[in-house]
Amino acid sequence: MWFFITFFVGLIGAGIALKCKVPAGAMIGSLFAVAIFSIVTGKAYLPQSYKVIAQISTGAFIGARIKYNDIVELKKVFKPAVIMVILMALINFVMGYFLYKSSDMDMKTALFCTAPGGIMDMTLIAYDFGADTSKVAVMQMMRLVSVMCLIPVLIKGVIRYYKAKSPADNIDTAKTAEEKVIKNEKEKTPFMVNFKKIAITMIIGTISGFIGYFAGIPAGAMSVSMAGVAAYNIKSNKAFMPIKLRQFIQVLGGALIGAKMTMGDLLGLKTIAVPVLIVISGFCLMNLILGIMVYKISDFNIPTSMFSAAPGGISDIAIIAGELGADTPKVAVMQFIRLVSVIAFYPILIKIIIQYF
Image (cartoon, rainbow, N blue to C red; front, side, top):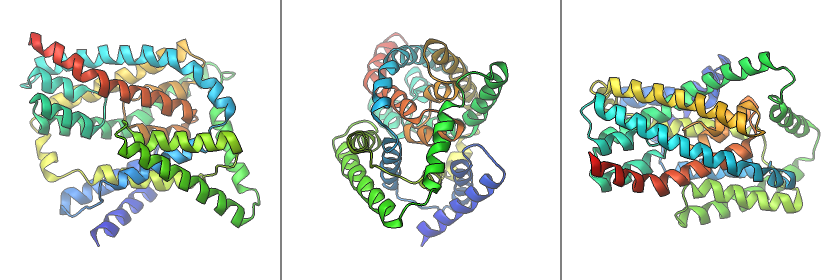
């Protein structure tokens, strides 16, 4: 019963946010509504296994829009991805050191609090290191919430600035492509044709996603689902996922994050209020610096560049990116490289750094 109530609360929050034209309103509205419901009642419930469903659906959605020409273009992702990951690591370690000096956290806890990886991944690795996992979990949660709430607004402002500065720029290229997809979907197509395409796409995405999930690949449910559907679409050009599915995924994703929030998390913020502000400000500044840098060294448009450098969840960022005119396949690949790099290399680097503190 609480599952249906929680999801219904998320739908109401999403509806209000969309009506108020909040960026990524379906996700943010759902997140806040469910978080408030969870804190007040303690009854919010959504199995975290549903995150796999959201990831698989997101992967299939992105994969269905990848064509052969997109694969050729992805060669251009490698250089900005490597530079972004290196600079992101440097900025995160500086933030971690500042957090260490300005709070009562030890160095390893501070570094894991500022690591731009998944909440569960960073918390589990932090546990192995003997860090304060409760603080790491809360700080990572606040990072994710702030990214979902503040980064879209920040990016929207940057897009507006660059659009005014250079109207002839390629800022709206991806958005135009997205609008064409929407227009094509509105064209009269036999229901059974679309249903068959959706069914085949979801079957391929689900099988691929679970292979990635059980193989233990970082963000495997989404990345392998995306790869499987993309391969099918490149070969057949028949993969299809309706645009309206994105808002459903956003509602589910926001509700999953909001359901994790408890009164204990809220009360715990009192003791780490200053560190939270430091981390949130640092991540916003980092996104601004790295996003503009990616824009300067690549042929990405500004929305794609900014979302590629956003330190949020890979599926969450990919879902929001399409709304503001970003090239979602490129964003997803950049985010995947970031996540893999964080999980593979951050623990090694943190282990080296804490030897000196």
